[in-house]
Length: 374
Image 1 (cartoon, one colour):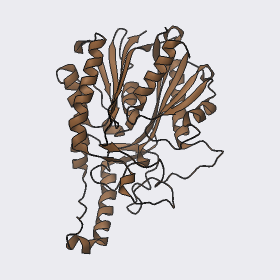
Image 2 (cartoon, rainbow, N blue to C red):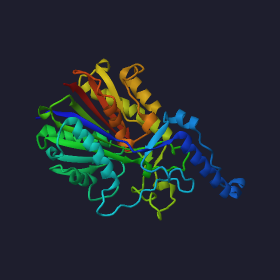
Image 3 (spheres, rainbow, N blue to C red):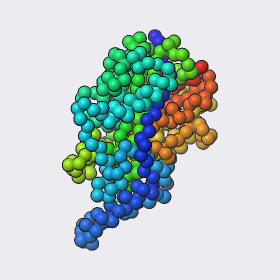
Image 4 (tube, rainbow, N blue to C red):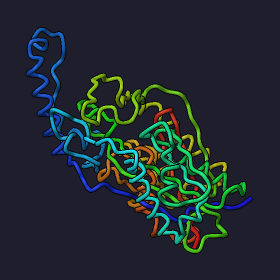
């Protein structure tokens, strides 16, 4: 048995941002246009008028202040309200591969490892650009890694499930190194015309390099233990493929084909599920609350994270103990906990213990306990 360790991490951040004020202006213009078009039905009581959104509502509901996106022009157009992502040619890199490669290269550079020395690429994300060939194999080809690649999808928990899969392969000796990459174009499956969720998601890509601890040459995080769990629920669902409404000429208007969630049920059911999962994982590994230096949680909602932090630590988290990046990135699905880890881990010292946790549709929850080394 070999010991796996996270030796590098990388984040690709799109160049375009949408602030809450920008988003609200576009949504309210859309709502006014819709209400005018349906004025007679609204007056007859047949349909309800669309209410305005506000920056204050968004911040209070989520803790989000802005989000990064691959295309803001379509999202902010009241007549479109979704990103424009032109279809790429067969000889061009896919959008997800392009994002993922950038994050992978950053992780490889951090670890000081050549792509050719990587044995596996796992593309773990919520929304894949196509069914096949696998995005992971495309990333493998562009980077020039060896071995194999495959895609996996466990919604917002994809990153931690991918880490477990890679760590298990390293433990068994079947591979020496793996890249787990999470390119998330959440803007492509969000319903931007729904006041209850139009502010939730942003785009990003993250990657971690996991390798045998005895091969690592610098500071790293040994993967002490991983744990995953699922429980079926329809309370968070997306029935569509990836880019149906993001290209000109594809304007199907079925609300049930985009991201949907029953927020109240999600809060009620997911919070205890995640808290109990983390507590059980820590107990089985002999990790007490006082042993945890840092919690890198899924970045879905600030209230949810604050609740989980209090349950896990038995008190309100101190500043820096449970970093949030939600205010800047919004919910980036599987990538959120990895952004938090990549941006808030360099200050830990040898012997420090932390926990990465993601959770989401499925329901799914994955946790990774790591120890700082070197």
